[in-house]
Image (cartoon, rainbow, N blue to C red; front, side, top):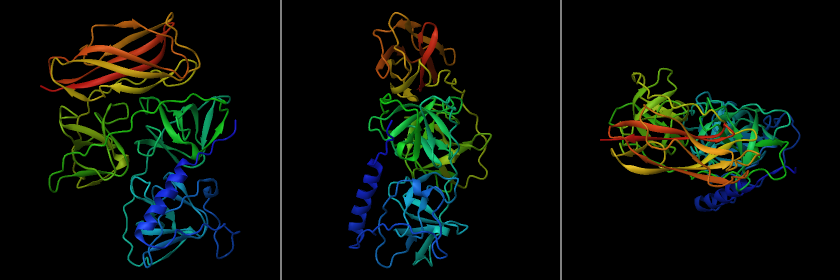
Length: 451
């Protein structure tokens, strides 16, 4: 199959850069120049940089601090090679300089498409001007590793060419689950509708949904079929600002788009997404210090508490935060997307964590997509309840037949009538699609009842 090299991201970067440059000054964006062979005055390109997408950044105004790439150099999300690569600043290209790392080894330049608004360049591959009073910028937390399940040799797969983000949806505005390390191989289960992102299988014990998304521009492809399954994107996240923290309280500030969850782990339901810069008050932490408990509106959590990963927030005054008790852990997804029978959850209503009054009647609806290679047939398939949380069912039905065959790539809507319990707490049900007694699709809902 011919390798895809989508250019949508590059086009967006060019447009943003041109607009910002026109607004800030009359100076045109710098012309990209070819990288010459290394000499004593011209360092070799940053390793791996030549294979990445070259991006154009806002040009500095006259007299502003500026950085010029001495060779092709990676633009990273943080000041070390542990951070993912956004793209490449080509040799001779200039960018607006906005800061420096604490150890002086990396410079930060303005990069509007990054969640933090900047990207980092190895100082070894750059020359600067007007940099006498640069602010020292705090490094964001190093992202965790998203654990790919290794594909078999003949499986369709993608290979990371650098450290790249693995996100919860096909876009940079979706929160990341972590990063895929350079050379990591992942089973490609489908492609986004715009062709710019691959859905890749993740260990469901690490991320409950069992898959994430990587940018097609930052991976190589192997064994990809001519017409891969197109996977529907979930709705873009809605961003919610936590309540303002009390003066002097311990706080957490999002450094990227962050899933705010009902508990300290990626298997807990997402209550909402916090945008970069959103700040909440910390009320506790988990025993490992990997998650912060934060105060949220009771519109999203009946307890007024939720959890954010320490990998995507910066903190203040958090040295003496107590360890908080975690809610009951939801079940691990027993059926990650792979093989002839597989699915992904496209949408769900109501969303996990919805707060309801006791006795509220509602319909739970899940749209699931068949991303396997076999059809789910009416004759051999059932929608089956696997269990309930807190020994309190929400529905009276235990199973139902499929109403139609579901071919590979097609979607199916599961709807179950439910009623919120009469007491406060967190409740949920776990459902599946079974075919010939084999579990092929797994999904659940979690609600919070508030008296």
